[in-house]
Image 1: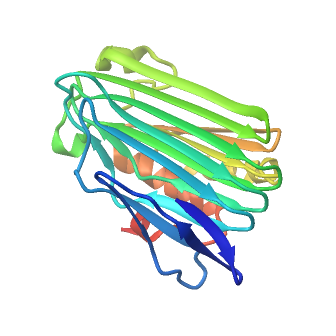
Image 2: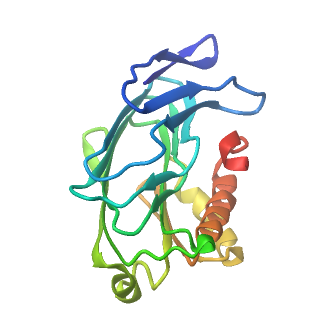
Amino acid sequence: MHFKHRNGVTVLDNLFQSGCLRAHLLRTEPGHSSEAVLLNTAGGLTGGDRLSMAISWGPLTHATVTTQACEKLYRAAAGEARIDTTLNVHAGARAEWLPQETILFDRAALRRDLQVRIAPGSVFTGLEATVLGRTAMGEVVSNARFTDQWRIWRGAQLIYADAFALGGDIPALIAKMPVTQDRLAFASLLHVSSEAEGALKAVRGELPTLDCITAASAWNGLLAIRFIANEGRHLRAAIVRVLNVLRESPLPRVWQI
């Protein structure tokens, strides 16, 4: 998928899609950036499945890419599911990667990889959120495998690298890991911009009001926010509050449902 700038508006330049993954570019409403919504028509993933996405924002474009619903990872009889995402943000573009939560069910296996290349002078906001089972449905994830990796480059320089892994007895692992603190829902939100450090005070001002544990840091034109929560609904509510601090336009419609 590639966005281009035409007559002051961001439009879809080209799109190739195959398999279960589909994309829809929504009609732009006043005050909104252009929005593309991804849909997995298979309804979820299991061991051996793979989603691969390559998205590019051309110069001066402004577009948000999100998903129609939460991605669901079901029990894997063998192997693991993979979600590989490559994002390229060209000069002067404002790019947002805001998928809804990924939900892992018991015995799921997922390897997720996000690679982002940002041109100097562009703006990028990226989110990945994960929920271990639906607590409102009484679901318990006793065993699962999950690996998550981020790599972000500004020009030729690697400016952010993060890796997270869970495997085996999930209740025991999340109880002792400092990054989870016995909570079942967690997310990372990254904002890369020349104004990122200036946004830190406003973001930190919002954190004490959220119904989850959060922390924010900023350095070298990058703002990083972490969330951990007892339930997916608390995580989502916190993410929405912080995104509304960072964003200049209303959230995508799928996030407002």
